[in-house]
Length: 50
Image 1 (cartoon, rainbow, N blue to C red):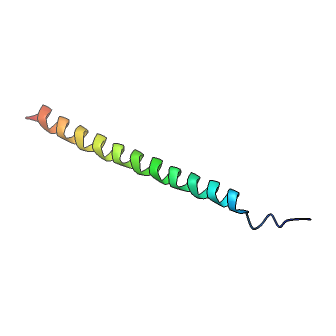
Image 2 (image 1 turned 45 degrees about the horizontal axis):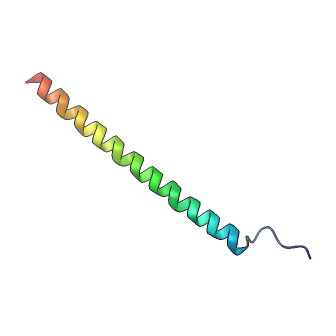
Image 3 (image 1 turned 120 degrees about the vertical axis):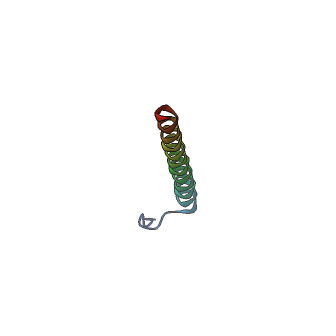
């Protein structure tokens, strides 16, 4: 019987949703690191100028 590949089966859906959650967590962690880096960089420059 031919299954419709446009509608993923449950296993595929679980894999996709798990991957999406992982990708979202990775993006969030990266943006947090960038914010911390920028903040630290600004603070360091301010201290050097004083």
